[in-house]
Length: 185
Picture: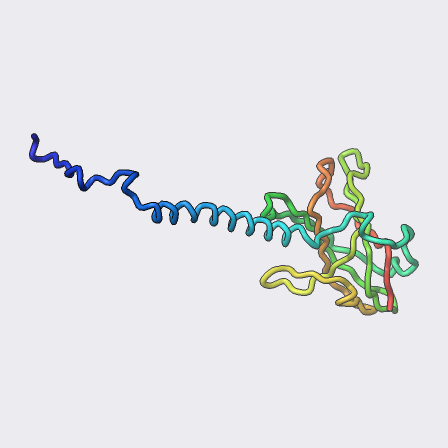
Protein backbone atom coordinates (compact mmCIF):
# COMPACT_ATOMS: atom_id res chain seq x y z
CA UNK A 1 0.00 0.00 0.00
CA UNK A 2 1.25 3.49 -0.90
CA UNK A 3 2.40 5.35 2.24
CA UNK A 4 1.20 8.71 0.88
CA UNK A 5 -2.39 7.55 0.53
CA UNK A 6 -3.95 7.34 3.92
CA UNK A 7 -7.25 5.78 4.57
CA UNK A 8 -9.33 6.08 7.70
CA UNK A 9 -10.12 3.00 9.60
CA UNK A 10 -13.66 1.84 9.10
CA UNK A 11 -14.56 2.86 12.65
CA UNK A 12 -13.85 6.56 11.86
CA UNK A 13 -15.99 6.74 8.68
CA UNK A 14 -19.30 8.48 9.28
CA UNK A 15 -22.23 6.88 7.59
CA UNK A 16 -25.70 8.46 7.19
CA UNK A 17 -27.08 5.84 9.57
CA UNK A 18 -24.63 6.87 12.29
CA UNK A 19 -25.70 10.54 12.31
CA UNK A 20 -27.91 11.32 15.23
CA UNK A 21 -31.57 11.84 14.40
CA UNK A 22 -31.58 14.99 16.58
CA UNK A 23 -28.97 16.77 14.45
CA UNK A 24 -30.80 15.84 11.24
CA UNK A 25 -34.12 17.07 12.65
CA UNK A 26 -32.49 20.32 13.71
CA UNK A 27 -31.15 20.99 10.21
CA UNK A 28 -34.44 20.06 8.52
CA UNK A 29 -36.52 22.38 10.76
CA UNK A 30 -34.67 25.54 9.64
CA UNK A 31 -35.67 25.29 5.99
CA UNK A 32 -39.47 25.39 6.49
CA UNK A 33 -39.09 28.17 9.06
CA UNK A 34 -36.94 30.21 6.68
CA UNK A 35 -39.40 29.72 3.82
CA UNK A 36 -42.32 30.69 6.07
CA UNK A 37 -40.49 33.83 7.23
CA UNK A 38 -39.77 34.87 3.63
CA UNK A 39 -43.42 34.32 2.65
CA UNK A 40 -44.70 36.34 5.64
CA UNK A 41 -42.29 39.21 4.89
CA UNK A 42 -43.32 39.21 1.21
CA UNK A 43 -47.04 39.28 2.08
CA UNK A 44 -46.58 42.11 4.61
CA UNK A 45 -44.49 44.09 2.13
CA UNK A 46 -47.08 43.60 -0.62
CA UNK A 47 -49.88 44.77 1.68
CA UNK A 48 -47.89 47.84 2.71
CA UNK A 49 -46.94 48.72 -0.87
CA UNK A 50 -50.31 48.02 -2.46
CA UNK A 51 -52.59 49.08 0.38
CA UNK A 52 -53.83 52.67 0.56
CA UNK A 53 -52.94 53.61 -2.96
CA UNK A 54 -55.16 55.09 -5.64
CA UNK A 55 -58.78 53.95 -5.65
CA UNK A 56 -60.77 53.10 -8.74
CA UNK A 57 -63.33 55.64 -9.87
CA UNK A 58 -66.19 53.57 -8.47
CA UNK A 59 -64.65 53.60 -4.99
CA UNK A 60 -63.18 57.08 -5.07
CA UNK A 61 -66.21 59.10 -4.64
CA UNK A 62 -69.81 59.77 -4.32
CA UNK A 63 -69.09 63.26 -5.59
CA UNK A 64 -70.96 64.49 -8.62
CA UNK A 65 -69.37 64.33 -12.05
CA UNK A 66 -69.77 68.09 -12.49
CA UNK A 67 -66.97 70.21 -10.98
CA UNK A 68 -68.01 72.75 -8.39
CA UNK A 69 -67.81 76.45 -9.24
CA UNK A 70 -64.85 76.80 -6.82
CA UNK A 71 -62.79 74.34 -8.90
CA UNK A 72 -61.78 77.13 -11.28
CA UNK A 73 -60.07 78.87 -8.33
CA UNK A 74 -57.71 75.92 -7.88
CA UNK A 75 -54.78 76.06 -10.31
CA UNK A 76 -52.81 72.91 -11.08
CA UNK A 77 -49.29 73.40 -12.48
CA UNK A 78 -45.81 71.87 -12.74
CA UNK A 79 -47.01 68.36 -13.62
CA UNK A 80 -44.27 65.74 -13.71
CA UNK A 81 -44.19 61.96 -13.69
CA UNK A 82 -41.94 59.27 -12.30
CA UNK A 83 -42.00 55.51 -11.83
CA UNK A 84 -40.53 53.02 -9.41
CA UNK A 85 -40.66 49.30 -8.78
CA UNK A 86 -42.43 47.90 -5.76
CA UNK A 87 -41.44 44.87 -3.71
CA UNK A 88 -44.08 42.74 -5.41
CA UNK A 89 -42.29 43.17 -8.75
CA UNK A 90 -44.82 45.65 -10.14
CA UNK A 91 -44.46 49.23 -11.22
CA UNK A 92 -45.82 52.29 -9.39
CA UNK A 93 -46.47 55.50 -11.34
CA UNK A 94 -46.41 58.90 -9.65
CA UNK A 95 -47.94 62.14 -10.93
CA UNK A 96 -46.53 65.14 -9.06
CA UNK A 97 -47.58 68.75 -9.37
CA UNK A 98 -48.48 71.94 -7.55
CA UNK A 99 -51.94 73.18 -6.55
CA UNK A 100 -52.69 76.81 -5.70
CA UNK A 101 -55.82 78.11 -3.99
CA UNK A 102 -56.57 81.39 -5.76
CA UNK A 103 -59.95 81.79 -4.06
CA UNK A 104 -61.11 83.18 -0.73
CA UNK A 105 -62.10 79.91 1.03
CA UNK A 106 -60.14 77.09 2.66
CA UNK A 107 -60.11 73.79 0.75
CA UNK A 108 -60.51 70.76 3.04
CA UNK A 109 -60.76 68.10 0.35
CA UNK A 110 -60.52 67.63 -3.40
CA UNK A 111 -61.07 64.83 -5.86
CA UNK A 112 -59.21 64.93 -9.15
CA UNK A 113 -60.03 63.21 -12.43
CA UNK A 114 -56.86 61.84 -14.04
CA UNK A 115 -57.04 60.88 -17.72
CA UNK A 116 -54.31 58.84 -19.41
CA UNK A 117 -54.50 58.86 -23.23
CA UNK A 118 -53.30 56.32 -25.81
CA UNK A 119 -51.40 57.00 -29.05
CA UNK A 120 -54.67 57.79 -30.85
CA UNK A 121 -55.39 60.45 -28.18
CA UNK A 122 -58.32 58.36 -26.92
CA UNK A 123 -58.89 57.70 -23.23
CA UNK A 124 -56.83 54.68 -22.15
CA UNK A 125 -57.62 55.09 -18.45
CA UNK A 126 -59.67 57.58 -16.46
CA UNK A 127 -59.55 57.53 -12.70
CA UNK A 128 -60.98 59.73 -9.95
CA UNK A 129 -59.01 59.93 -6.70
CA UNK A 130 -58.40 62.09 -3.65
CA UNK A 131 -55.76 64.79 -4.05
CA UNK A 132 -52.93 64.20 -1.58
CA UNK A 133 -50.42 66.92 -0.70
CA UNK A 134 -46.77 66.35 0.16
CA UNK A 135 -46.12 66.77 3.88
CA UNK A 136 -42.55 65.58 4.14
CA UNK A 137 -39.76 64.82 1.67
CA UNK A 138 -37.08 63.29 3.92
CA UNK A 139 -36.32 60.46 4.49
CA UNK A 140 -39.10 59.61 1.99
CA UNK A 141 -42.02 61.44 0.43
CA UNK A 142 -45.04 61.36 2.74
CA UNK A 143 -48.47 62.55 1.59
CA UNK A 144 -51.74 63.36 3.31
CA UNK A 145 -55.22 64.48 2.32
CA UNK A 146 -56.44 68.07 2.39
CA UNK A 147 -58.68 67.11 5.32
CA UNK A 148 -55.51 66.78 7.41
CA UNK A 149 -53.64 69.69 5.78
CA UNK A 150 -56.23 72.19 4.44
CA UNK A 151 -55.24 74.55 1.62
CA UNK A 152 -55.85 78.12 2.82
CA UNK A 153 -56.69 81.04 0.51
CA UNK A 154 -53.59 82.15 -1.40
CA UNK A 155 -51.62 79.02 -0.38
CA UNK A 156 -49.81 76.58 -2.68
CA UNK A 157 -48.79 72.98 -2.02
CA UNK A 158 -47.00 70.21 -3.89
CA UNK A 159 -49.12 67.12 -4.48
CA UNK A 160 -48.55 63.49 -5.43
CA UNK A 161 -50.96 61.02 -7.02
CA UNK A 162 -49.99 57.35 -6.84
CA UNK A 163 -51.08 54.70 -9.38
CA UNK A 164 -50.39 51.02 -8.80
CA UNK A 165 -51.44 50.24 -12.36
CA UNK A 166 -51.69 52.27 -15.55
CA UNK A 167 -53.26 50.95 -18.74
CA UNK A 168 -50.77 49.26 -21.10
CA UNK A 169 -52.39 51.30 -23.90
CA UNK A 170 -51.22 54.57 -22.31
CA UNK A 171 -48.94 56.58 -24.63
CA UNK A 172 -46.55 57.67 -21.87
CA UNK A 173 -47.48 61.36 -22.12
CA UNK A 174 -48.48 63.45 -19.12
CA UNK A 175 -52.05 62.70 -18.09
CA UNK A 176 -54.73 65.36 -17.80
CA UNK A 177 -55.51 66.27 -14.18
CA UNK A 178 -58.79 68.14 -13.48
CA UNK A 179 -60.51 69.07 -10.25
CA UNK A 180 -63.70 66.97 -10.04
CA UNK A 181 -64.95 67.85 -6.55
CA UNK A 182 -64.03 70.35 -3.83
CA UNK A 183 -64.84 70.40 -0.12
CA UNK A 184 -64.68 73.87 1.46
CA UNK A 185 -64.61 75.30 4.94
